[in-house]
Length: 146
Image (tube, rainbow, N blue to C red):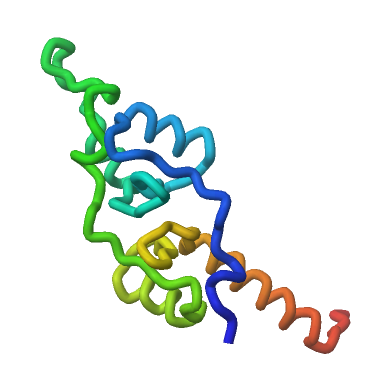
């Protein structure tokens, strides 16, 4: 059984809860990520900001300038998800993949004793699927067309 610790991302980009939306948007854009764990102190996971949260919190450009909210004025703790599904680093890849699919979520932070260890995303599982398909193709007999 392969555990998720073999494919999880451990070089994490995180954000504190007192940071603002503008910073979150910049971090997501610059690092090409859709999930931003919110941590306090010694990497204690307190929430999660997703691209969906960011887009929902972003004020419409259709609103008049005087009443428009600015991204630097929106605080992460006010938009983050606090009821975050997490997984232990020893969970199997199958368990984690089934959980993501069943609940329609895009990531699972990996937490041990309350401390963020990594994150696993649906994109990680696409990579696993590609690897498995390549292995299957390598073992199939070569058929010449013609």
